[in-house]
Length: 51
Image 1 (cartoon, helix red, strand yellow):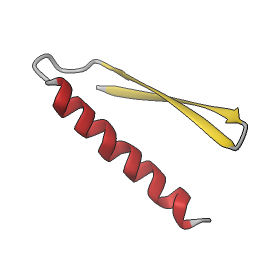
Image 2 (cartoon, one colour; image 1 turned 180 degrees about the vertical axis):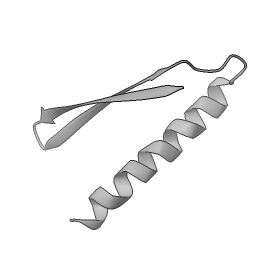
Image 3 (cartoon, rainbow, N blue to C red; image 1 turned 90 degrees about the horizontal axis):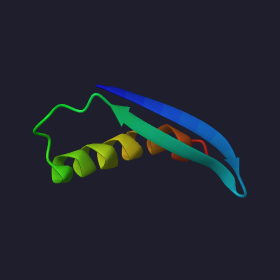
């Protein structure tokens, strides 16, 4: 599985678009949503500690 991120300027910061390719068959939407939530929190932690 691969996740690609695209960063772009936003009015008040940065927009992040993420695309997940090669998702394994059998992964439920609930599990996928849970995984994305964990990824967002991990990405936010170092950024929030800088403010």
